[in-house]
Amino acid sequence: MDDIVKSIQEDILRPEVGLNTILLKAKVLAHQLKNHRLKRWVNYELDGYPHLEKVPEYRIIYTPLLGYIFNGYNGYKNIPIPLNKTPDWFQETANKIHFCPGIKTVEEYAISQNSITFAWNAEQIAVWNYYNPSGSSGHQCYEVKRPVSYSVFAQILLTVRSRLQDFVLELSDLPWKMPKDSSLLSDQIERLVSLTIYNNAQGGNVATFDQREQQVQNQNNAARDINIKGDINIRTIQNTNDFISELQKVKSELSKAGKAQIIDAEIVTDADYEIATAIQEAKKATPNKNLVLKAIENAKNLLSKSAGAVEFVTALINLIAAGITLF
Image 1 (cartoon, rainbow, N blue to C red):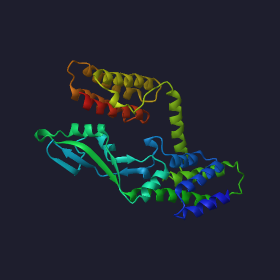
Image 2: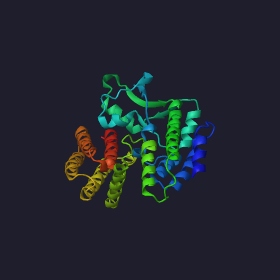
Image 3: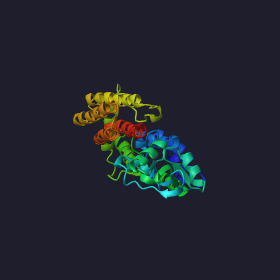
Image 4: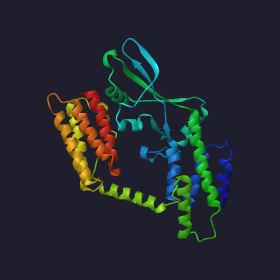
């Protein structure tokens, strides 16, 4: 144990040693300590984060928005894109990047000495154009770039090194003469992980964290029959019938989530009403686009209040984007 801790301490202070190498050693340490949360963090940093909600705050990047505006005759590049006319749910993610790739990619971006450019997808551009009508000028946004300086990725690397360093330094001070199966020692290690790796300012309120994880696990068990994914591919929605079919799927799965008590019953009832309103309007020969989108947005806002409705919220956001381009 002492050897691996000392080796990590030494490598952290050597810039020429890649973080992927250091994290592989930390993976061995996490296994020896039998600490699940440390193992998970190390694995996520090495392999990449599987879900946006699991990305830690130091990997969330805020970017400027630079657009290409064109009306068929005149074009303007690198125009700052305002968000004030777009809804809150759009503003929450429009200029924010949850950077999920593993640490090797972060290192490559950091040493590139170049700005890395990310771009809005077609759905995001469609949403922005919808809420920012061009009027008589005919201008529309065709591209939005989100440049990120290489120094931002260098800071991510520094943060990971710093947190791991804090952990191994504090770990060195623990009383290792305790029995290995001592619950007190395990609690102290868990507290260190909470304080140094997860940056829990509450002084290692581990019980709160564990209870939340258990709650999520219980919800997952109760939700085993629920099939809702937020990553609806709106390119497969070719017509109104496809759009209605996706809404009906969300409505059906929402009902299951309510019965499983994953989402508050009152929220489910109100959101179900809004989705039903959107479906009813969409079925009309000449549906009112604004009424359809407003009802879906109302449902999305209601479900945003529930921690168990993340996938439903994402699905509805994608359906709003689909509705903007479809109707």
